[in-house]
Image 1: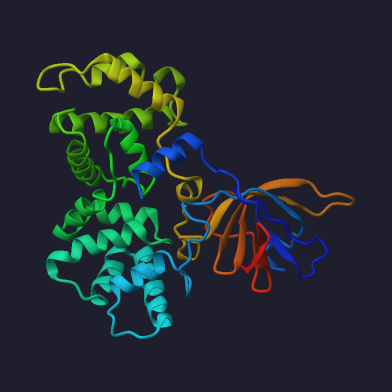
Image 2: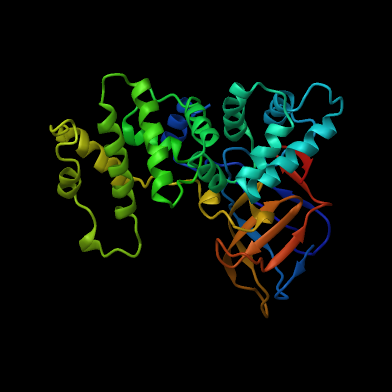
Length: 352
């Protein structure tokens, strides 16, 4: 998490971020092993404090001169004939924007701007989806769940970046589904789970048959949805006995060991399979997709003496801080430009 502070007197100053774990340490370690002054529309003003949830990286925007993902992607996907890193960055930014609007268009632009053999396209696209920061998790899921040959080949190559050795099936699913949003279309889900099951079996040969992995994966998705559906009456939620019945005879007519099912059920009941909060509330508005940071902060409103502190959903992106009344809202209540603001991260000052 990162705490942000803004000067109360309205003068130029600094925004300070202090890093704290945003997810349980046990989950974070497992995932690390497996996968490499503003214009206010409502006239309000005040001070800010609290915490904003971070995504997988402290900075989701592609920047010039970064030595990490952007440099690797630029080198791999943009021909060596380009001598300017600035040109590389501009193309990558445009590809990300196009992808976040419509995945198919972004991938088309990616293919047009790189020199790879036809049989290497899926692998390179998969690497772009896996390593590039700022991509919409929703759009990634929609693309890899597509029916076209390139979509399916990319999904298969994408899953090669995960190592599921010695992980239980639900643990592998938890890691995978933090990287992209599972689409709502049943046929897309079906295609993704089929390829996921094949990858899991390749990492854990002999543990389950192909049909078992696929059916049990689907059953885990249903269990997770059932247990955490806010609109479902508590009395109607799936029990362990119901989970066992759903998986009766899936191993070529035989039942799976109930101890295995019990462990899966207990782990999901203890912790929902879900995405990071910032990704879970990803906006449909392209301006807020792939934000640098997103999360909850408390804002002090106006008052006679002391304004009341209220919680709002904040999004930091492209040198602007936006806040919304509710997560997922499309229109911000306030826009705070940060061009003249610097961040103090562990004693190092950097521009926002």
